[in-house]
Image (cartoon, rainbow, N blue to C red; front, side, top):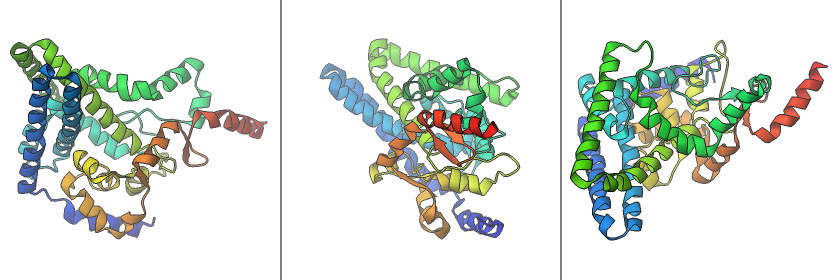
Length: 339
């Protein structure tokens, strides 16, 4: 991709970097409203059948995922034109999703600035090792990496740890404003949980909120994982890394069925989002459809996305993800070349 094409690509997307207040308010109504209604129905259904409760919980989890996309847009200052409005709504939706607004905004900004950069991994991203790095690691480190990348850990234990525990603490060196926002978020989460436990009982609260939390958490991590983990992705060392290439080649187009696309706030158009984080979620599809060069970017579907579960390591030499099964052959090949 030439430099001129890269510049033109960003220019073509630029007109969509405008929040529409009416559209944003409508999204708040059609997202938060159904979520609270489904939560109430899940609670009411406890006296009828827990299977019915789980049905409502699954739907509520979908809407909580959509709430996270609103939170996500607020962190990019793309949901409202006013920064203060973004911060207020971002903090509120952060309470619902268990994410401190300022803390996550900081880490996520680093993710966008360093995505697919092999020399700047470690903040706001998923742990990825190259084949050479993995082969050079001691056994305990390899075991730790395999555990981390195990689906049960990554999509089950991992989200629980991050959302419930890791998000509750500020990182070393965090600024005062970021710290205060984390404290406020924690206090509001505790107050909301206590109020619900006192009102409906802690058992009912856990029976309803538990599955909503687990399902939405797994969905969120899956979306993040699959949109950066596909066979012919893009990773480069810092000297060769390019922001636009990282956006359109290192972020996939996750083509979902329309209902799932709506529930996930169009985040499947992840390439557009990484190309321009200021495009609000409700304009991502339009930006994609009206930008010709984006029609040929990596596309995955529900079926093909399952293949990403076997991609464990980035092979710098072949420029693609590989699984553990290929490691033995690659190790032998590289050892023979060194002899």
